[in-house]
Image (cartoon, rainbow, N blue to C red; front, side, top):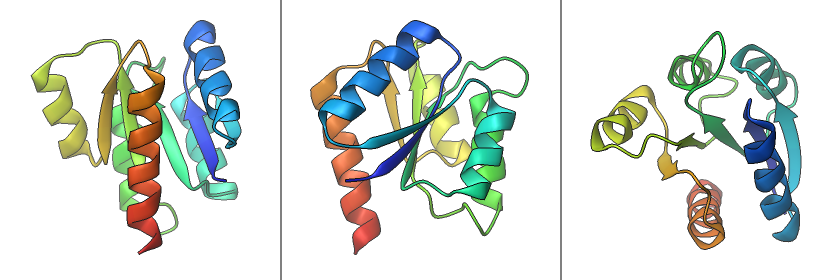
Length: 124
């Protein structure tokens, strides 16, 4: 299956994401902040990134813009994760370069469908 990088600072949200990815057969890499997530994405590019938007220091949208502006990581699909399920946040996420947007708490069917869709699109 896929190698997925989770960039999430909340331990409970990270644990849930890890469990859901493991149950779907994916391998997960983890980072607790944007800076270490960017470093991981550049050193061992994953197949997909789950990006929390509200991170300490650099936020997830700024990190996504950096990923999308770097030729090494530009093609990696990014799913924005946020507890703030507002239309404006969805639009900001997509403008920043996120390929999809999921509101927390994570619902496994939505997460799996979004991951499968983005991975299939990249395989074409």
